[in-house]
Length: 65
Image (cartoon, rainbow, N blue to C red; front, side, top):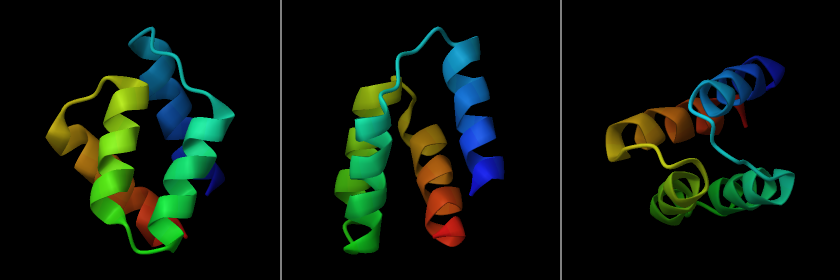
């Protein structure tokens, strides 16, 4: 999980995006409950990434969980 978090931090930092820990925890919570689409949506809202980037990040996060 730390590898994925480091990647996310790098993406966020390089794009001058804001990411709050509670946002990440909410994404994880959604994934744990099988709500992948809402997790992608929340991830996009928090990071400003496009759909494909968010989907890929969520799938990587899901694999780590």
